[in-house]
Length: 369
Image (tube, rainbow, N blue to C red; front, side, top):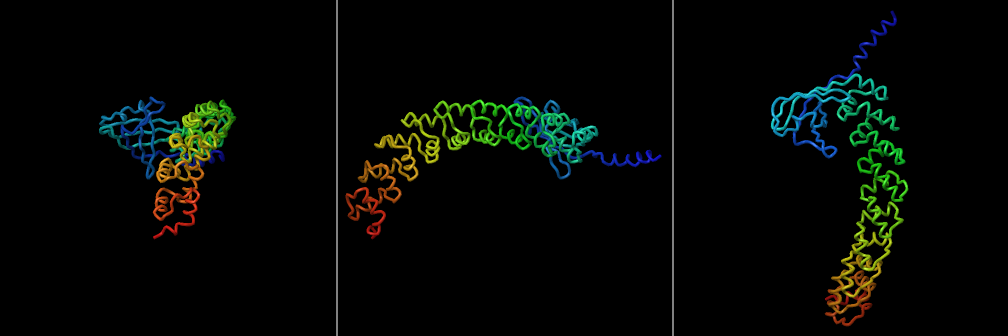
């Protein structure tokens, strides 16, 4: 008798815990779709559940009426997920649909997920249905070593396409990644195949942050090979990333090699790009008589504004063939063509380059009035 009373007492409790059906409104637009795997078209259905709005992606083949831009009339369709079933009723008008839906959770799914370690509440079941988190998906992740992931982590991985095959591929590449790293690599396209290709280029086994950094900035295996063919065989990942950030391309290196600047250091190349030392700048200087200027001087000239135009202007006022260091000194102390003309107007004629600098520093007061 005691056992019978116990069963009667537990019965109502089990029924009370079962997730209730969800009702709400839906809308769709035949123009609101995306393509998956290059060919398969997916339709987006917008769901309103109280104050919450969610998007449900469904293959066009499952709901062809919603993908018809001229579709009109009554519509009824069903979307089945492992977590439960969506029933839709409504109307279409010129490719736009709207109506009411009901979502009925699947009791076997809830029980099966509990066996996998996930005791789901109503909101969890709803989210798992929206993102199609199946028991098979969770089991596959657990087989690949992704255990004890939070419910929110499962949603995050599903959204970004982290599936068991992806986890397995990374393990084959020599990585045992956690949820955040798996998601990060998917977001930025640092795939297991990319990691394997990078290893083949002699960069060892980069950590996840390095792989992501390389993908963000476009350090591809091809780029690594191109730079190696130009003589840059031992660049670190940070140096390669620095090249991409600052625009040190194979074409840039080749252009300077053609001008006689061979075997430039990685620091030289980055500094040249940062300060605007271009092949065109070097050619212009050569045309003005400044050929084979050392890289350090080219950078100084760009930093202080010793441009080809400035050199021409100083030549026009009588200061041609001035050494690079003196031109830089001119710019630092404000000696330009206007200053020279003003000095001459006050009787300061035929000054040496050194005197010009001295006059600019100490004698500007003599030129007032």
